[in-house]
Length: 282
Length: 276
Image (tube, helix red, strand yellow):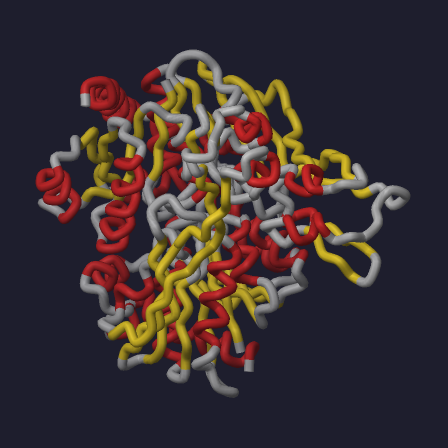
Protein backbone atom coordinates (compact mmCIF):
# COMPACT_ATOMS: atom_id res chain seq x y z
CA UNK A 1 0.00 0.00 0.00
CA UNK A 2 1.53 3.27 -1.12
CA UNK A 3 0.35 6.59 0.29
CA UNK A 4 1.69 9.86 -1.09
CA UNK A 5 1.50 13.03 1.02
CA UNK A 6 1.38 16.21 -1.03
CA UNK A 7 0.11 19.77 -0.78
CA UNK A 8 0.52 22.01 -3.80
CA UNK A 9 1.52 24.87 -1.53
CA UNK A 10 4.73 24.64 0.50
CA UNK A 11 4.76 24.78 4.28
CA UNK A 12 1.32 23.32 4.96
CA UNK A 13 2.72 20.47 7.05
CA UNK A 14 3.41 17.55 4.70
CA UNK A 15 6.54 16.35 6.49
CA UNK A 16 5.07 16.79 9.98
CA UNK A 17 2.02 14.78 9.03
CA UNK A 18 3.78 12.18 6.89
CA UNK A 19 6.17 11.50 9.77
CA UNK A 20 3.36 11.31 12.34
CA UNK A 21 1.40 8.85 10.20
CA UNK A 22 4.49 6.74 9.64
CA UNK A 23 4.92 6.46 13.43
CA UNK A 24 1.30 5.38 13.87
CA UNK A 25 1.43 2.86 11.04
CA UNK A 26 4.13 0.67 12.62
CA UNK A 27 5.16 -1.48 9.59
CA UNK A 28 6.28 1.25 7.28
CA UNK A 29 8.84 2.33 4.68
CA UNK A 30 9.43 6.08 4.42
CA UNK A 31 10.40 7.71 1.14
CA UNK A 32 11.44 11.35 1.03
CA UNK A 33 10.70 12.56 -2.47
CA UNK A 34 11.13 16.24 -1.57
CA UNK A 35 14.66 15.94 -2.86
CA UNK A 36 15.65 19.57 -2.97
CA UNK A 37 14.54 20.26 0.58
CA UNK A 38 14.50 16.87 2.33
CA UNK A 39 13.47 17.16 5.96
CA UNK A 40 11.93 13.82 6.91
CA UNK A 41 15.22 12.12 7.81
CA UNK A 42 15.98 14.89 10.32
CA UNK A 43 13.51 13.23 12.69
CA UNK A 44 15.48 9.99 12.69
CA UNK A 45 18.96 9.20 13.85
CA UNK A 46 19.62 6.43 11.40
CA UNK A 47 22.58 4.70 9.84
CA UNK A 48 23.09 4.83 6.10
CA UNK A 49 23.21 1.17 5.12
CA UNK A 50 23.28 1.83 1.38
CA UNK A 51 24.66 4.69 -0.64
CA UNK A 52 24.62 5.01 -4.41
CA UNK A 53 25.57 7.77 -6.81
CA UNK A 54 22.69 8.77 -9.05
CA UNK A 55 23.29 9.98 -12.58
CA UNK A 56 20.16 11.80 -13.68
CA UNK A 57 21.29 13.28 -16.92
CA UNK A 58 24.32 14.07 -18.99
CA UNK A 59 26.42 17.12 -19.67
CA UNK A 60 28.31 18.00 -22.83
CA UNK A 61 32.07 18.37 -22.73
CA UNK A 62 34.13 19.97 -25.51
CA UNK A 63 37.59 18.56 -26.17
CA UNK A 64 39.55 21.74 -26.83
CA UNK A 65 42.26 19.80 -28.64
CA UNK A 66 39.90 18.99 -31.51
CA UNK A 67 37.72 22.09 -31.36
CA UNK A 68 38.19 24.45 -34.31
CA UNK A 69 35.91 27.12 -32.79
CA UNK A 70 33.55 26.93 -35.79
CA UNK A 71 30.67 27.82 -33.47
CA UNK A 72 28.15 25.39 -34.98
CA UNK A 73 27.46 23.97 -31.52
CA UNK A 74 26.53 27.39 -30.17
CA UNK A 75 24.04 27.93 -33.00
CA UNK A 76 22.35 24.56 -32.52
CA UNK A 77 22.07 24.66 -28.72
CA UNK A 78 18.49 25.45 -27.75
CA UNK A 79 19.42 26.16 -24.14
CA UNK A 80 22.04 28.89 -24.68
CA UNK A 81 24.49 26.63 -22.88
CA UNK A 82 27.42 27.28 -25.20
CA UNK A 83 29.26 30.59 -25.48
CA UNK A 84 32.62 30.99 -27.20
CA UNK A 85 32.84 27.21 -27.38
CA UNK A 86 32.61 26.87 -23.61
CA UNK A 87 29.79 24.95 -21.99
CA UNK A 88 27.76 26.36 -19.12
CA UNK A 89 27.02 23.20 -17.17
CA UNK A 90 24.09 24.78 -15.30
CA UNK A 91 22.31 25.49 -18.58
CA UNK A 92 23.34 22.32 -20.42
CA UNK A 93 20.47 19.83 -20.53
CA UNK A 94 22.56 16.99 -21.93
CA UNK A 95 20.51 16.62 -25.12
CA UNK A 96 23.48 15.86 -27.34
CA UNK A 97 22.45 18.10 -30.24
CA UNK A 98 25.91 19.72 -30.16
CA UNK A 99 27.63 16.31 -30.30
CA UNK A 100 25.72 15.51 -33.51
CA UNK A 101 26.48 18.81 -35.24
CA UNK A 102 30.19 19.12 -34.42
CA UNK A 103 32.15 18.49 -37.63
CA UNK A 104 35.27 17.52 -35.64
CA UNK A 105 33.39 15.19 -33.25
CA UNK A 106 35.00 17.23 -30.49
CA UNK A 107 32.01 17.08 -28.14
CA UNK A 108 30.79 14.19 -26.10
CA UNK A 109 28.16 13.63 -23.46
CA UNK A 110 29.22 12.42 -20.05
CA UNK A 111 27.02 11.21 -17.23
CA UNK A 112 26.53 13.87 -14.59
CA UNK A 113 26.09 12.90 -10.97
CA UNK A 114 22.96 14.64 -9.77
CA UNK A 115 22.55 13.10 -6.34
CA UNK A 116 23.64 10.58 -3.77
CA UNK A 117 20.84 8.22 -2.81
CA UNK A 118 20.65 6.53 0.56
CA UNK A 119 18.86 3.79 2.37
CA UNK A 120 18.91 4.92 5.96
CA UNK A 121 18.03 2.44 8.68
CA UNK A 122 16.53 3.76 11.88
CA UNK A 123 14.96 1.89 14.76
CA UNK A 124 11.63 2.90 13.25
CA UNK A 125 12.29 1.47 9.82
CA UNK A 126 13.85 2.24 6.48
CA UNK A 127 14.06 5.67 4.84
CA UNK A 128 14.80 6.05 1.14
CA UNK A 129 16.19 9.52 0.48
CA UNK A 130 18.60 11.55 -1.63
CA UNK A 131 21.07 14.38 -1.22
CA UNK A 132 21.14 16.43 -4.38
CA UNK A 133 24.25 17.94 -5.89
CA UNK A 134 23.81 21.70 -5.77
CA UNK A 135 21.92 23.03 -8.78
CA UNK A 136 21.03 19.57 -10.08
CA UNK A 137 17.75 18.55 -11.60
CA UNK A 138 15.15 17.10 -9.24
CA UNK A 139 14.18 14.89 -12.10
CA UNK A 140 11.39 12.41 -12.36
CA UNK A 141 14.02 9.72 -12.84
CA UNK A 142 15.48 10.37 -9.38
CA UNK A 143 12.07 10.35 -7.70
CA UNK A 144 11.16 7.10 -9.47
CA UNK A 145 14.46 5.58 -8.35
CA UNK A 146 13.85 6.59 -4.72
CA UNK A 147 10.39 5.04 -4.78
CA UNK A 148 11.63 1.77 -6.20
CA UNK A 149 14.68 1.74 -3.96
CA UNK A 150 12.51 2.07 -0.85
CA UNK A 151 9.88 -0.39 -2.01
CA UNK A 152 12.49 -3.19 -2.09
CA UNK A 153 12.12 -3.21 1.70
CA UNK A 154 8.33 -3.24 1.69
CA UNK A 155 6.50 -6.47 2.35
CA UNK A 156 2.92 -7.43 1.66
CA UNK A 157 1.40 -5.49 4.56
CA UNK A 158 3.94 -2.66 4.69
CA UNK A 159 2.71 0.88 4.25
CA UNK A 160 4.98 2.97 2.03
CA UNK A 161 4.63 6.64 2.90
CA UNK A 162 5.98 9.15 0.41
CA UNK A 163 6.72 12.72 1.51
CA UNK A 164 6.41 14.66 -1.73
CA UNK A 165 7.54 18.16 -2.70
CA UNK A 166 5.40 21.28 -3.16
CA UNK A 167 4.19 22.16 -6.64
CA UNK A 168 2.56 20.21 -9.45
CA UNK A 169 5.44 19.69 -11.85
CA UNK A 170 7.69 16.83 -12.77
CA UNK A 171 8.86 15.80 -9.26
CA UNK A 172 5.28 15.73 -7.93
CA UNK A 173 3.96 13.89 -10.99
CA UNK A 174 6.66 11.26 -10.55
CA UNK A 175 5.76 10.91 -6.86
CA UNK A 176 2.07 10.24 -7.44
CA UNK A 177 1.85 8.12 -10.55
CA UNK A 178 0.76 4.56 -9.92
CA UNK A 179 0.28 5.16 -6.18
CA UNK A 180 -2.66 3.73 -4.24
CA UNK A 181 -3.81 6.88 -2.49
CA UNK A 182 -2.85 10.49 -1.94
CA UNK A 183 -3.30 12.65 1.13
CA UNK A 184 -3.34 16.34 0.25
CA UNK A 185 -2.35 18.46 3.25
CA UNK A 186 -3.76 21.94 2.98
CA UNK A 187 -4.33 24.90 5.30
CA UNK A 188 -7.14 27.46 5.53
CA UNK A 189 -5.51 30.31 3.61
CA UNK A 190 -6.52 31.67 0.21
CA UNK A 191 -3.08 30.80 -1.18
CA UNK A 192 -3.33 27.20 -0.05
CA UNK A 193 -6.83 26.92 -1.42
CA UNK A 194 -5.76 28.24 -4.82
CA UNK A 195 -2.95 25.69 -4.86
CA UNK A 196 -5.22 22.92 -3.57
CA UNK A 197 -7.45 23.28 -6.61
CA UNK A 198 -4.53 22.79 -8.97
CA UNK A 199 -2.97 19.85 -7.18
CA UNK A 200 -6.40 18.21 -6.87
CA UNK A 201 -6.96 18.66 -10.60
CA UNK A 202 -3.60 16.97 -11.19
CA UNK A 203 -4.45 14.00 -8.97
CA UNK A 204 -7.92 13.66 -10.47
CA UNK A 205 -6.41 13.54 -13.95
CA UNK A 206 -4.47 10.48 -12.76
CA UNK A 207 -7.60 8.90 -11.32
CA UNK A 208 -6.05 8.69 -7.84
CA UNK A 209 -7.95 8.12 -4.61
CA UNK A 210 -7.74 11.50 -2.90
CA UNK A 211 -7.98 12.26 0.83
CA UNK A 212 -7.79 15.77 2.22
CA UNK A 213 -6.40 17.00 5.53
CA UNK A 214 -6.89 20.60 6.65
CA UNK A 215 -3.91 21.44 8.83
CA UNK A 216 -3.90 24.47 11.19
CA UNK A 217 -7.67 24.38 10.55
CA UNK A 218 -8.62 27.00 13.15
CA UNK A 219 -6.50 29.87 11.80
CA UNK A 220 -9.34 30.91 9.52
CA UNK A 221 -12.73 29.29 10.00
CA UNK A 222 -14.30 30.87 6.92
CA UNK A 223 -11.71 29.49 4.57
CA UNK A 224 -11.74 26.17 6.39
CA UNK A 225 -15.45 25.96 5.54
CA UNK A 226 -14.73 26.89 1.92
CA UNK A 227 -12.22 24.05 1.68
CA UNK A 228 -14.71 21.63 3.19
CA UNK A 229 -17.27 22.75 0.60
CA UNK A 230 -14.70 22.22 -2.18
CA UNK A 231 -13.98 18.73 -0.85
CA UNK A 232 -17.68 17.85 -0.98
CA UNK A 233 -18.17 19.32 -4.44
CA UNK A 234 -15.28 17.33 -5.87
CA UNK A 235 -16.40 14.20 -4.01
CA UNK A 236 -13.09 13.92 -2.14
CA UNK A 237 -12.72 12.46 1.33
CA UNK A 238 -11.93 14.81 4.21
CA UNK A 239 -10.04 12.61 6.65
CA UNK A 240 -8.85 15.12 9.20
CA UNK A 241 -8.89 18.67 10.53
CA UNK A 242 -5.81 19.38 12.62
CA UNK A 243 -5.90 22.45 14.89
CA UNK A 244 -3.03 24.93 15.00
CA UNK A 245 -0.78 23.84 17.85
CA UNK A 246 2.45 25.50 19.00
CA UNK A 247 3.65 22.07 20.13
CA UNK A 248 4.21 21.20 16.46
CA UNK A 249 6.88 23.89 16.21
CA UNK A 250 8.44 22.53 19.40
CA UNK A 251 8.44 19.03 17.93
CA UNK A 252 10.19 20.24 14.76
CA UNK A 253 12.82 22.11 16.73
CA UNK A 254 13.37 19.14 19.02
CA UNK A 255 13.35 16.88 15.95
CA UNK A 256 10.87 14.52 17.55
CA UNK A 257 7.66 13.45 15.76
CA UNK A 258 4.55 15.18 17.13
CA UNK A 259 2.96 11.95 18.30
CA UNK A 260 5.40 11.83 21.22
CA UNK A 261 3.88 14.95 22.77
CA UNK A 262 1.02 13.71 24.92
CA UNK A 263 -0.73 17.04 25.56
CA UNK A 264 -0.77 18.09 21.92
CA UNK A 265 -4.15 18.82 20.31
CA UNK A 266 -2.55 18.34 16.90
CA UNK A 267 -1.31 14.91 17.99
CA UNK A 268 -4.80 13.85 19.05
CA UNK A 269 -6.31 15.05 15.79
CA UNK A 270 -3.65 13.26 13.73
CA UNK A 271 -4.35 10.03 15.60
CA UNK A 272 -8.04 10.39 14.80
CA UNK A 273 -7.17 11.10 11.19
CA UNK A 274 -5.06 7.95 11.04
CA UNK A 275 -8.04 5.92 12.22
CA UNK A 276 -10.06 7.36 9.31
CA UNK A 277 -7.27 6.79 6.79
CA UNK A 278 -6.72 3.23 7.90
CA UNK A 279 -10.38 2.36 7.32
CA UNK A 280 -10.15 3.72 3.78
CA UNK A 281 -6.85 2.30 2.61
CA UNK A 282 -6.94 -1.17 4.12
CA UNK B 1 17.99 44.75 -11.82
CA UNK B 2 16.40 41.34 -11.13
CA UNK B 3 16.25 40.32 -7.47
CA UNK B 4 15.38 36.66 -6.88
CA UNK B 5 13.46 35.83 -3.71
CA UNK B 6 14.02 32.21 -2.75
CA UNK B 7 14.05 29.99 0.32
CA UNK B 8 14.70 26.31 -0.14
CA UNK B 9 11.91 25.36 2.22
CA UNK B 10 8.34 25.98 1.12
CA UNK B 11 6.04 28.20 3.13
CA UNK B 12 8.67 30.48 4.68
CA UNK B 13 7.18 33.64 3.18
CA UNK B 14 8.67 34.23 -0.28
CA UNK B 15 5.42 35.56 -1.68
CA UNK B 16 4.71 37.67 1.41
CA UNK B 17 8.16 39.24 1.11
CA UNK B 18 8.13 39.57 -2.71
CA UNK B 19 4.73 41.22 -2.99
CA UNK B 20 5.22 43.64 -0.12
CA UNK B 21 8.80 44.52 -1.04
CA UNK B 22 7.75 45.18 -4.64
CA UNK B 23 5.24 47.74 -3.38
CA UNK B 24 7.77 49.29 -0.97
CA UNK B 25 10.43 49.55 -3.69
CA UNK B 26 7.95 50.59 -6.39
CA UNK B 27 9.48 47.62 -8.24
CA UNK B 28 7.84 45.22 -10.67
CA UNK B 29 6.61 41.89 -9.35
CA UNK B 30 7.34 38.77 -11.37
CA UNK B 31 5.85 35.48 -10.15
CA UNK B 32 8.12 32.65 -11.29
CA UNK B 33 6.52 30.06 -9.01
CA UNK B 34 4.69 28.96 -12.12
CA UNK B 35 3.49 25.63 -10.70
CA UNK B 36 1.59 27.31 -7.86
CA UNK B 37 1.63 31.11 -8.35
CA UNK B 38 -0.01 33.07 -5.52
CA UNK B 39 1.28 36.63 -5.81
CA UNK B 40 -1.65 37.96 -7.82
CA UNK B 41 -3.99 36.90 -5.01
CA UNK B 42 -2.43 39.58 -2.81
CA UNK B 43 -1.59 42.25 -5.41
CA UNK B 44 -4.90 41.87 -7.25
CA UNK B 45 -3.67 43.46 -10.48
CA UNK B 46 -5.93 44.21 -13.41
CA UNK B 47 -4.77 41.66 -15.96
CA UNK B 48 -4.27 43.49 -19.24
CA UNK B 49 -2.63 40.87 -21.39
CA UNK B 50 -2.23 37.12 -21.52
CA UNK B 51 0.23 35.32 -23.76
CA UNK B 52 0.56 31.62 -24.32
CA UNK B 53 3.78 29.76 -23.66
CA UNK B 54 4.45 27.23 -26.35
CA UNK B 55 7.11 24.57 -26.73
CA UNK B 56 8.23 22.75 -29.85
CA UNK B 57 7.68 19.06 -30.37
CA UNK B 58 8.70 16.85 -33.30
CA UNK B 59 6.23 15.91 -35.97
CA UNK B 60 7.11 12.91 -38.13
CA UNK B 61 6.16 12.84 -41.80
CA UNK B 62 5.02 9.22 -42.33
CA UNK B 63 5.68 9.45 -46.07
CA UNK B 64 9.37 10.17 -45.51
CA UNK B 65 9.99 8.20 -42.32
CA UNK B 66 11.62 4.80 -42.88
CA UNK B 67 11.38 3.79 -39.21
CA UNK B 68 15.14 3.47 -38.88
CA UNK B 69 14.87 4.42 -35.19
CA UNK B 70 17.83 6.84 -35.22
CA UNK B 71 15.71 9.56 -33.61
CA UNK B 72 14.74 7.12 -30.83
CA UNK B 73 18.37 6.23 -30.18
CA UNK B 74 19.51 9.82 -30.07
CA UNK B 75 16.76 11.15 -27.76
CA UNK B 76 18.25 11.51 -24.27
CA UNK B 77 14.83 12.02 -22.70
CA UNK B 78 13.05 8.85 -23.84
CA UNK B 79 10.46 11.02 -25.57
CA UNK B 80 10.50 8.81 -28.69
CA UNK B 81 9.93 5.09 -28.86
CA UNK B 82 9.86 2.54 -31.65
CA UNK B 83 6.94 0.13 -31.49
CA UNK B 84 7.11 -2.32 -34.41
CA UNK B 85 7.27 0.05 -37.39
CA UNK B 86 5.85 3.10 -35.68
CA UNK B 87 7.72 5.92 -34.02
CA UNK B 88 5.74 7.19 -31.05
CA UNK B 89 6.25 10.52 -29.32
CA UNK B 90 5.66 11.16 -25.60
CA UNK B 91 5.06 14.90 -25.89
CA UNK B 92 5.47 15.75 -22.22
CA UNK B 93 8.93 14.18 -22.05
CA UNK B 94 10.21 16.18 -25.03
CA UNK B 95 12.74 18.89 -24.10
CA UNK B 96 12.51 20.54 -27.57
CA UNK B 97 16.25 20.14 -28.10
CA UNK B 98 16.21 19.44 -31.82
CA UNK B 99 18.55 16.42 -31.70
CA UNK B 100 16.06 14.16 -33.49
CA UNK B 101 15.80 16.50 -36.47
CA UNK B 102 19.58 16.74 -36.76
CA UNK B 103 20.01 12.95 -36.90
CA UNK B 104 17.17 12.22 -39.33
CA UNK B 105 18.66 11.46 -42.72
CA UNK B 106 15.24 11.29 -44.40
CA UNK B 107 14.33 14.85 -43.45
CA UNK B 108 11.15 13.39 -42.01
CA UNK B 109 11.08 15.56 -38.88
CA UNK B 110 9.69 19.03 -38.48
CA UNK B 111 8.45 20.86 -35.42
CA UNK B 112 5.05 21.97 -34.27
CA UNK B 113 4.11 23.97 -31.20
CA UNK B 114 1.94 23.09 -28.26
CA UNK B 115 0.88 25.19 -25.30
CA UNK B 116 2.19 24.34 -21.83
CA UNK B 117 1.23 27.46 -19.93
CA UNK B 118 0.57 31.16 -20.04
CA UNK B 119 1.90 34.53 -18.89
CA UNK B 120 -0.44 37.15 -17.41
CA UNK B 121 0.56 40.82 -17.32
CA UNK B 122 -1.06 43.64 -15.43
CA UNK B 123 -0.71 46.59 -13.07
CA UNK B 124 -1.48 47.46 -9.52
CA UNK B 125 -0.69 50.61 -7.52
CA UNK B 126 1.69 51.75 -10.31
CA UNK B 127 3.78 48.59 -10.35
CA UNK B 128 3.79 46.05 -13.17
CA UNK B 129 2.73 42.54 -12.17
CA UNK B 130 3.63 39.54 -14.31
CA UNK B 131 3.14 35.86 -13.59
CA UNK B 132 3.66 32.55 -15.29
CA UNK B 133 1.11 29.77 -14.91
CA UNK B 134 1.98 26.17 -15.81
CA UNK B 135 -0.91 24.13 -17.22
CA UNK B 136 -1.95 21.40 -14.77
CA UNK B 137 -0.52 18.08 -15.94
CA UNK B 138 2.52 19.59 -17.64
CA UNK B 139 5.77 18.51 -15.99
CA UNK B 140 8.14 21.27 -17.09
CA UNK B 141 8.07 24.70 -15.53
CA UNK B 142 11.38 25.91 -16.97
CA UNK B 143 10.14 26.96 -20.47
CA UNK B 144 7.63 29.28 -18.79
CA UNK B 145 10.22 30.68 -16.39
CA UNK B 146 12.56 31.34 -19.33
CA UNK B 147 9.90 33.11 -21.35
CA UNK B 148 9.04 35.24 -18.31
CA UNK B 149 12.61 36.21 -17.57
CA UNK B 150 13.64 36.82 -21.18
CA UNK B 151 11.04 39.60 -21.28
CA UNK B 152 11.24 41.54 -18.05
CA UNK B 153 10.47 45.26 -17.81
CA UNK B 154 13.12 47.86 -17.09
CA UNK B 155 13.89 48.85 -13.55
CA UNK B 156 13.93 46.71 -10.43
CA UNK B 157 12.12 43.38 -10.74
CA UNK B 158 11.31 41.35 -7.65
CA UNK B 159 11.21 37.73 -8.73
CA UNK B 160 9.14 35.39 -6.60
CA UNK B 161 10.76 31.95 -6.97
CA UNK B 162 9.35 28.50 -6.45
CA UNK B 163 10.36 26.49 -3.38
CA UNK B 164 13.31 24.14 -3.59
CA UNK B 165 16.83 24.48 -4.93
CA UNK B 166 16.68 22.65 -8.21
CA UNK B 167 16.08 23.48 -11.86
CA UNK B 168 13.16 25.91 -11.44
CA UNK B 169 15.13 27.97 -8.94
CA UNK B 170 18.44 27.63 -10.83
CA UNK B 171 16.76 28.97 -13.96
CA UNK B 172 15.50 31.97 -12.02
CA UNK B 173 18.74 32.86 -10.24
CA UNK B 174 20.56 32.69 -13.61
CA UNK B 175 18.70 35.81 -14.68
CA UNK B 176 19.21 37.66 -11.39
CA UNK B 177 21.78 40.13 -10.13
CA UNK B 178 20.93 39.73 -6.46
CA UNK B 179 19.01 37.42 -4.15
CA UNK B 180 16.97 37.54 -0.98
CA UNK B 181 16.68 34.31 0.99
CA UNK B 182 13.56 34.11 3.13
CA UNK B 183 13.77 31.68 6.00
CA UNK B 184 12.09 30.78 9.28
CA UNK B 185 13.86 30.05 12.57
CA UNK B 186 13.12 26.32 12.68
CA UNK B 187 15.33 23.27 12.17
CA UNK B 188 13.69 22.61 8.80
CA UNK B 189 14.04 26.23 7.73
CA UNK B 190 17.70 26.24 8.72
CA UNK B 191 18.48 22.94 7.01
CA UNK B 192 17.00 24.09 3.72
CA UNK B 193 18.42 27.62 4.02
CA UNK B 194 21.94 26.20 4.01
CA UNK B 195 21.20 24.42 0.72
CA UNK B 196 19.80 27.64 -0.74
CA UNK B 197 22.86 29.63 0.39
CA UNK B 198 25.19 27.08 -1.20
CA UNK B 199 23.23 27.39 -4.45
CA UNK B 200 23.23 31.19 -4.52
CA UNK B 201 26.97 31.31 -3.78
CA UNK B 202 27.69 29.36 -7.00
CA UNK B 203 26.20 32.27 -8.95
CA UNK B 204 28.46 34.87 -7.32
CA UNK B 205 25.71 37.43 -6.77
CA UNK B 206 25.16 39.51 -3.65
CA UNK B 207 22.50 38.18 -1.30
CA UNK B 208 20.94 38.77 2.09
CA UNK B 209 18.55 36.99 4.42
CA UNK B 210 15.13 37.87 5.78
CA UNK B 211 13.93 35.94 8.81
CA UNK B 212 10.17 35.49 8.76
CA UNK B 213 8.00 34.25 11.66
CA UNK B 214 10.83 35.42 13.92
CA UNK B 215 10.25 34.56 17.58
CA UNK B 216 12.54 37.36 18.72
CA UNK B 217 14.99 35.11 20.52
CA UNK B 218 18.56 34.68 19.45
CA UNK B 219 17.85 31.88 17.04
CA UNK B 220 19.90 29.50 14.88
CA UNK B 221 19.48 31.69 11.81
CA UNK B 222 20.86 34.80 13.53
CA UNK B 223 23.88 32.80 14.69
CA UNK B 224 24.40 31.35 11.23
CA UNK B 225 24.28 34.78 9.59
CA UNK B 226 26.90 36.09 12.01
CA UNK B 227 29.16 33.07 11.54
CA UNK B 228 28.90 33.13 7.76
CA UNK B 229 28.99 36.91 7.46
CA UNK B 230 25.69 36.99 5.59
CA UNK B 231 23.86 40.30 5.81
CA UNK B 232 20.49 40.28 7.49
CA UNK B 233 18.05 42.41 5.53
CA UNK B 234 15.32 42.23 8.13
CA UNK B 235 13.01 40.28 10.39
CA UNK B 236 9.26 39.82 10.29
CA UNK B 237 7.98 38.94 13.74
CA UNK B 238 5.90 35.84 14.26
CA UNK B 239 2.37 37.19 14.60
CA UNK B 240 -1.10 35.69 14.60
CA UNK B 241 -2.34 38.96 13.14
CA UNK B 242 -0.03 38.62 10.17
CA UNK B 243 -1.13 35.00 9.74
CA UNK B 244 -4.77 36.10 9.72
CA UNK B 245 -4.21 38.92 7.19
CA UNK B 246 -2.24 36.50 5.00
CA UNK B 247 -4.87 33.79 5.22
CA UNK B 248 -7.48 36.20 3.86
CA UNK B 249 -5.32 37.06 0.86
CA UNK B 250 -4.81 40.62 2.04
CA UNK B 251 -1.60 42.54 1.53
CA UNK B 252 0.34 43.55 4.65
CA UNK B 253 1.58 46.73 2.94
CA UNK B 254 -1.90 48.27 3.20
CA UNK B 255 -1.52 48.26 6.99
CA UNK B 256 0.58 51.22 8.26
CA UNK B 257 2.57 49.23 10.81
CA UNK B 258 3.71 46.69 8.23
CA UNK B 259 4.17 49.31 5.53
CA UNK B 260 6.92 50.89 7.68
CA UNK B 261 8.54 47.49 8.18
CA UNK B 262 8.71 46.75 4.47
CA UNK B 263 9.94 50.21 3.61
CA UNK B 264 12.74 49.75 6.11
CA UNK B 265 13.57 46.37 4.53
CA UNK B 266 13.41 47.92 1.07
CA UNK B 267 16.16 50.35 2.05
CA UNK B 268 18.26 47.53 3.50
CA UNK B 269 17.73 45.44 0.38
CA UNK B 270 19.13 48.07 -1.94
CA UNK B 271 22.07 48.60 0.38
CA UNK B 272 22.90 44.90 0.76
CA UNK B 273 22.51 43.98 -2.87
CA UNK B 274 24.37 46.96 -4.21
CA UNK B 275 27.37 46.96 -2.01
CA UNK B 276 27.91 43.37 -0.97
